[in-house]
Amino acid sequence: MTTHAVRIESVSKIFNPGRPNEVQALVDIDLDISPGEFVTLIGPSGCGKSTLLRLIASLIDPTGGTIHVNGKSAEQARLDQDYGMAFQRAGLFDWRTVARNIELPLELMGWKKSERERRSKEMLELVKLGEFGDHHPAELSGGMQQRIAIARSLSFSPSLLLMDEPFGALDEMTREHMQDEVLRLWSETGTTVVFVTHSIPEAVYLSTRVVVMSPRPGRIATTIDVDLGGRNDDTRAETPFFEKVTEVRAALRAVEAA
Amino acid sequence: MNVPDRLRPYVAPLVAGVIILAGWEGTLAVTDPDGFVLPPPSDILGALVENRTQIWSASRNTGFVIVSGMIVGVLFGIVAALLVSRFRTANEVITPLAVAVNAIPIIAMAPIFNAWFGLLSPRSNQAIVVILVFFPIFINTAKGLTLVEPAQIELMESYAASKWRIMREVRIPNSLPFFFTAMKLSSSLAVIAAIVAEYFGGRQDALGPLITSSAGLTRYDDAWAAVLAGTLIGTVLYFVSVLLERFAMPWHSSMRNDPFAATR
Image 1: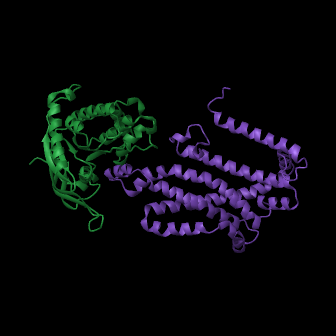
Image 2: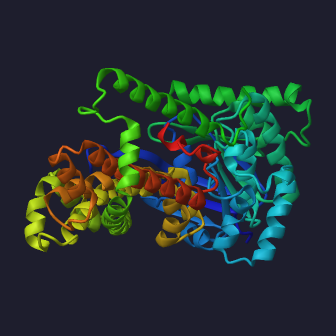
């Protein structure tokens, strides 16, 4: 039996159960993600896609059902630091230099100083910000900060990368550039990625599989496999890309209409 | 005029200060040559030089009350803020209590404090400084410890970091700008608290009694000289806070070469 990177079985999540402000955020979620997949979660706001990501991260607990990451409980996976995470806001620490931001998870894991420094240097090269290690985050642009946040999430080579609309606050050009960056990192490191977005082209361009979710209560409406092969500058202008964008858009329309 | 960037923040206030003092001096020379209502700056400076031994000794005693009271008040404020942000029960107990104590007009209680600590003991003055300094430090630091970007906390939790680790890596650094703003507020508050408290008791060789006795003898230039000494203490404390701030958070963007940045 192969171990799933993520295995979600009939998971539901209710916020504030039994209280007047009770919200049924997710019902009946079943989703298996294989190692090396790039899965995006897409859907209108309120569909619970960020909640699902936080459940996988074990930042919150499900009301029902089970979640396994790398064959163990989500909480154990969190304690074992099996995944790296990146958010819409870079969430860098102003009081640390860029290099020491990248080293933060390594410090928490007890890496030796020399190894941490070697690693952060490598990561800075990887996101092409080699000369900025000694800068403070406030001195960098939004796109550069986001690249540092991604470098930080990858610094300890997690087998799973969880990303919550990491490019949501970036302009279109930076965004497309960052998408290529993430794809490059994904193919170079072989890590599994779960990526939350509300941009259809972004989902299609990045994923091997798009999971379309519907709101109130959040559930999985459909999943769409994507195989664009090696992406390049022309991919976004070619027919297969448009066909998949149309397919995902139709699925989202159906969700909205329901 | 080309002013080097390093000196820029100092030049403008200095020039303005000189103009104000000259205006003060010049106006009084015409309107109030006896300097009865308001002594000219030159008289105040003269009184400061003439009474330097007395003012120095009084300043040392008052300075001791201010600095010792501030240190204790700041330490209490920090500890209370740490407890409140870390333990829910502490928050439920300490915060309402601190708010209630803050509502008491503390300075008005100076005569009562004298009865507790002894009329001529500096302890009562110190106690007033401690209480007055405590509150802004406590409230601001607690705010800085709690007002943290949620993504930063989630990130630390995703690394399975302990509560204390989150405190050390995220909450405490995040609270520093708030803490130092409170420090700057407190430095002037502490001077006012100490001098007004001294009006009612404490050591007699101090700035408060020096101001009241000089004013009582209509030697207003001496009284002003003592006020000036208090001002200098407050200014020194302010800049010590600025220096500590720079030392503690060299990363802060409001730090770049402007000692008045935080108040702008």
